[in-house]
Every structure is written in C-alpha cells, then in structure tokens.
Length: 181
Image 1 (spheres, one colour):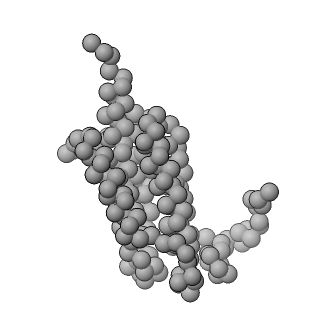
Image 2 (cartoon, rainbow, N blue to C red):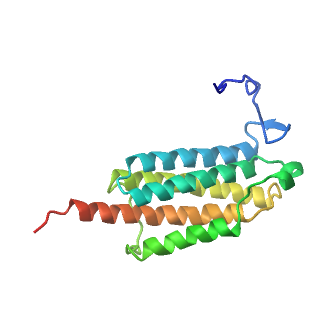
Image 3 (cartoon, rainbow, N blue to C red):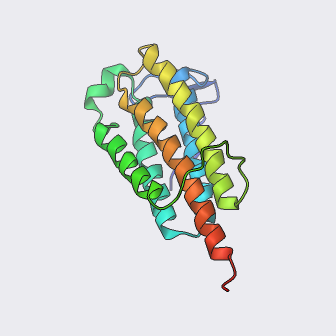
C-alpha cells in the first residue's frame, strides 16, 4: 500500500525529481502545484460531463498534465535524463482538437459569463486555473528556471481548448434539453 504521509514535508520543504529539496513556496512546486490544481478541476469537469468525447479529451489532457508536472519538478541537472517532456506534438494535438471542436460550435465574439451549465462552469473554472499556471510557467521560463518553451505553449493552447470545450458543452447541452416539436 502506498504511503501517503511521509513527514518529510513537515519542515516546509519538498523534493524535486532527484535528491534536491526546495521550500514549498519555491516557484517550481508552486507552479506544478497549480497544474495539479488544474488537473483536479479538469477531473471535476470530467466527472460531471455527459458527453463521452468530452470525457475522453479531458482524461487525455489530465494524463499529459502529469508529464508537464514531472518536467516542472525536474531540476536542470536531471533534465536530460527525463524520459518525457512537453513537445511540439503535444501542442499540435491540442490545436487539432480545437479545430475539430470549432467546426461543431460557433464561438461567440463576446465575454462569457460562466454558469450556463454545471459542466461548462467546471471547465471555465479549470481554464482560469490553467491560465494562472501558464503565467507562473512563463515566469519560470523568463527567469531561466525552465528552458522548454513548449510547457508555456501547451498551457496556453490548453486554456484555449478548455474555453472552446466549455462552449461546446453548453451548446450541445442546450440542444439536448430542447423539447421536440
């Protein structure tokens, strides 16, 4: 059985991949912790979603975010031994899904007030957390803490995808709820 409580964080430090320990408020754990928060918000959206395609997209994204968190938790001296990292292909796959969804739903050219549907609102909440993670990752990139710009590009495209997915859900939900005439 997995050991949940290690006690090693009781002094306010956490481990990166490898032996390095940093304060829990260090920008790296702060950023991958925010990505973890986004992953949980996406899990909530997946749990309440009715559309299987949406559920499948969200599950795949959640898996990819674990790769991204692993990359953020890897100190520079271990980066070359990291087997997985965010790539241009990850970003291209998000862009492809975006285009497929945009062909099925019109994206309004106005600000959206979240809350038309529970699953759409859950996605909008996840999107805002992803945007915060993106801002934090940009700081890591600009400060030279991380070198892979695909991390930032992935988070940027992901927030766009989640916005589109929320609109898709709201449109398909409203169509499903219309009475037949």
